[in-house]
Length: 405
Image (cartoon, rainbow, N blue to C red; front, side, top):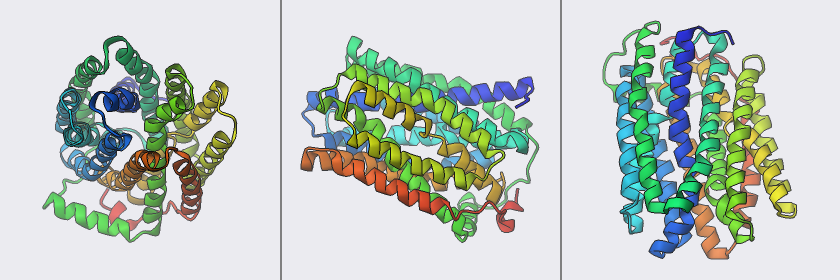
């Protein structure tokens, strides 16, 4: 992809935002053992708070995306940075499940809605030429994986070296680095080709746009697939360290596994974005979900060793966030760029409902059965459902919505 200096600077700033916001949250699973032990919680208590985080993130995302569509990303990103730092700092004082749900759940969930893909992509699709959009979104999504690769071992090292409370305070300071990154994204938004100014109530406009989008079968099927994506990746991301520990594998193996997921997803998201520029994105999405089911099946049937964990992490990592540029690319094909922040947020809400169920059911069913086996097999079945859901998706523009772009 040929790019000039302003575009490269935009992609660097956008990638750094996603690196920080996604990278920090990917290490939350390492806080499960020390926090549950310190406060004598069940795993369900911790899992519910992180599940609530994902649900709040999803509920708030359409509104954060719509605000970025209408007014630019600057104030949205600034708000997210403040909430992220505050949520991490207050986690150190969250001595009950209710308080943890307020800090890790509500505040960080709101923060993530302001600092992740829907808001960042709303800038990229305006500033990048149509023929390069899919690859640009793939590069930005890959930055989230780079954040996981970097931040996961850092977070585990902070917990081991300083303890979980000081580790959270260090992460709060790190989250504050999001604040100065709002300026370059706001500048790129203002310098992009102008779109017609949206008139009237934002809530009424969101309602009308969503109603038109909901009438499209392809939009509804994308929501089904993204629900499954959320269930799978958040269950694995939060509960894999505890699952490996239950089976006698060390924390180093778990840290390596999550880092490998992030490392291989850098390649996976870039490849997905690149392929999405020339091949049908719904077929690519169906293939990703089908391969996830295969990978999980092999993992739970094979003997559990450090090598099998590493192979699973590498394969799952390649498929991890590769759905993000493709799903957003389909939305642009269907509805244009004007409402991408809001419609991407709406589809992402279904992702986060799946995330909530994946992380919460992981803790609940473990507490009930003493095993994660039921949830592992559920991820396999849901992957097959998402495969079937994406096959009929079509990328034909919807005139009633796309014309507004």
